[in-house]
Length: 351
Image 1: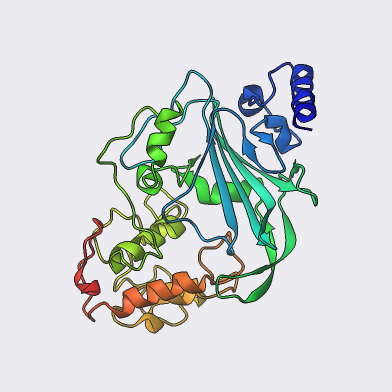
Image 2: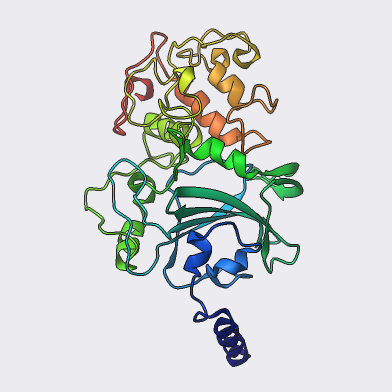
């Protein structure tokens, strides 16, 4: 049976004008978008999402919440090229690279993909595009306009949930990934990948130029052994700072949630809203030290109202565990607001 599959794949590769199990670089760098995920050749076996050569899987120490979806992530860099390491910013990927992220849920223990979002590095810059998987999981189809999909799953607390899962349209992809008007990757940074030997694996696979021994590392948001301040700050950065930074979509808010920020007011402590309205819920400050209930950051995080909820995209449910972490962090702050440390050490809020 295996020999028959191998022969079929080799024959298919010959028809396509490229070896089997090889990524089609022209599909990444060319104009337009292939109709199917299979057209790129990222996977030797789409049903199992077994990667093709130079496609390496990774995950993030602290990841963005997306309606409890499980995510499978891969990086591709074309032969003869490498991404350039950076201590702080996303790695600098060469033209022809791709970031592949599949969202799905488990049913009876098996992962079922719903959508795959691609970031493709073309000569003109990064482009983002979504693909939606068919019912039998054999391929995914281009959906530039996005769509809604009814989904049922069981959350970590064992509660059954039913949601209208939102596949973003191509323009909505830009809303989160825009930095100074250009699409940029978010998660492929040293501090998120620096665990379980992932940086070293990318170097060994020829995809990354180096992996310093002193590379930074972010806290895992749900690691109870890590400092509370470091966990909360990591959660806010990955979930919010792609917009809440001086070059992001929420730059006019004055609320900047990058992990490197050490100004308490900039990250919301005793910070008043730029404009009063439903988003503040009548609360005076984004973070009222010592009182999560009076903090509109929590109010917005725990809302599903489209005019109030933050983040604005990517969720239709509340991340109860993430909200509980931030409540604990805020409630632990002394009323006058603690100094904020971004280096992972304990601040007075967590002593």
